[in-house]
Image (cartoon, rainbow, N blue to C red; front, side):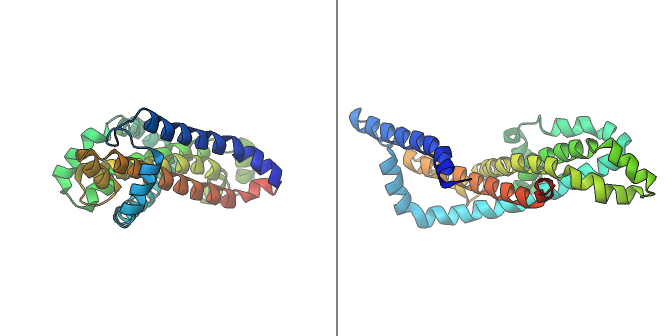
Length: 253
């Protein structure tokens, strides 16, 4: 993509964002909106600079929690998908329960996890895993199911074992679907970490925002929102880069 094309792609959203921020700032000044109700972007940036050491401390805690829960959710989701693919009759029995896990509100399940496992790190990781593993499991199952039937027949005619067919054909062709689930889980994991911290933690962006909300510090709440959005976008971008690297064989054809 040429430099001019990149500018044409990025200029409209960047321009719209800048216009929105300008209108936001001017509106708070013209209508004399109280800072505790709706601070302007300038006030939020100033408070963010002042609060940066504290914000960074909470951010690192959230990053660690998110990455641990996200990685665990990926592993459990991938193992579950492979297991259910290998045993279709178990898949038919357990599939409704997989869907059921996503219909239970996390905000209702979290207090039970805190009662069962205490106020430590473990229940917060479980919350993230519950949110993350489902998209990975479902997308991987769909990718495995959609393996080309002619290629499967060719592998069978070539004398390949079931294990060889899985590792050399089915799993590689399921990688694009897997990454679709990973991108969904990446954004969900940050939100799940925030909810877990809001409910029980003593550190993390969720705790920071809970304290700010109790003190009617809307500027600090916006700082927390910006951190969550930025981290979600960075994590999502990392998954996209990994997807391009793992699926480079598709563009090389």
